[in-house]
Image 1: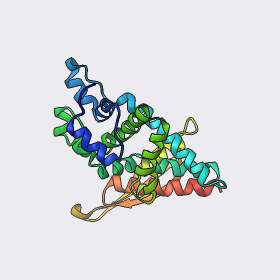
Image 2: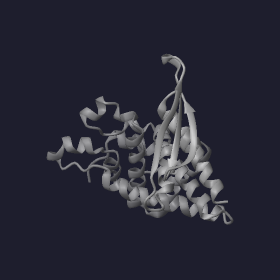
Image 3: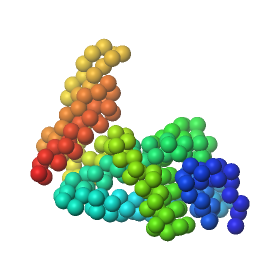
Length: 233
């Protein structure tokens, strides 16, 4: 077995888990851009681990919410799970781990700011959870998810990517169409305010304001999630 690299050892300390097969963790922090640049070395990216980790994370969080909230309806459980496992929540986990400093990125991705890109960091967190599962079993994975995510539920909700969470919610039914439209912008160029409306299948679900279109879209998505919650009660 290859000797663990120092960056992996340092990450293990932050994770609170020591790998029997450290190569699994090494693969979990290897982005496809790095693997593509080192094909001759047989380098493997974390994409397959990310796929597995996404399912493990969803199952463990769903199981925990189901047991903790015996009277909560399915719709509310789905929304809570979506908020806990959304990109923003997982990116915050990555920041606490200083995961960006440990990632293996290709030169171009690194120069483009990939170490701070939420999608890359969130994917790496899912890959790491899969690596823990493969190395230590579902019990070890549950403990990691508890420590990294479930013990930080308020932070997870605050850092959620509401657009992603809303998309995950509406995708439970086929044929759903979400659209965001800019309905108003005001103020001077250096301090503009934007208002965005989000519709579901042409029906207005929420509006939001912000100092950027992205911020306004997030606010609109948050309102839409609340509207969906009210509709199902």
